Length: 58
Image 1 (cartoon, one colour):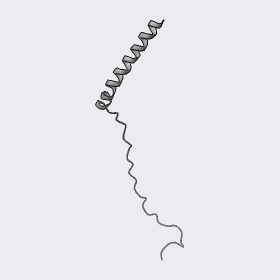
Image 2 (spheres, one colour; image 1 turned 90 degrees about the vertical axis):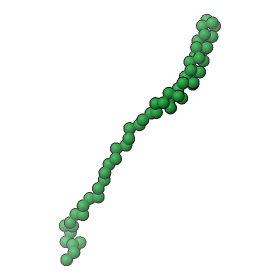
Image 3 (tube, helix red, strand yellow; image 1 turned 120 degrees about the horizontal axis):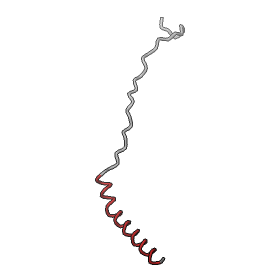
Image 4 (tube, helix red, strand yellow; image 1 turned 135 degrees about the vertical axis):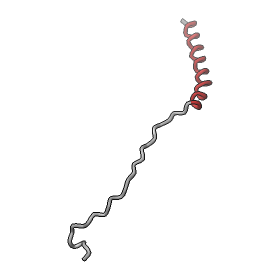
């Protein structure tokens, strides 16, 4: 059982070293591209004629 756990520990250490060596290079080669936020064109509302007779210019 100890021999099996020892080999498993060495294998895990080997995978960790390989991942630590190659993953940063892969991350630099293939950057993560997030989708762009859509731009919303907002136009001001046109002036509305007032229906209040007190506010109308005479």
